[in-house]
Image (cartoon, rainbow, N blue to C red):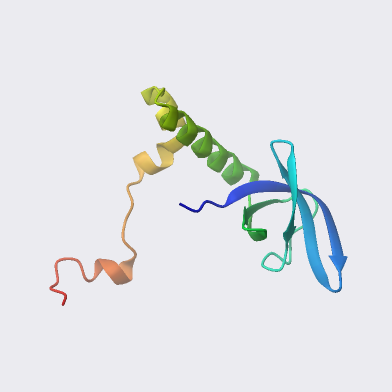
Length: 112
């Protein structure tokens, strides 16, 4: 499973016309490319995957992702209450996944 992690930009530098940022999460830092997030600024939150900042995220969305990651860790340890489960995954529990419209049109149709 691949997961993009929210991290905060604490420094930005440009070397040979390539923007890179130092990002941090839980006191661990790394350098990431900002090529997919050209509008990123110091202090912004970005989703990071394999050394790339994929997109900007709001502080609220970053907090929601962090809550889900914490919840996932607790679930894997096997010690969760229903309240803790809802705190981490309430958005998914309250809004079941739906197929995008172009796939919904094929539900119930015969396929080869």
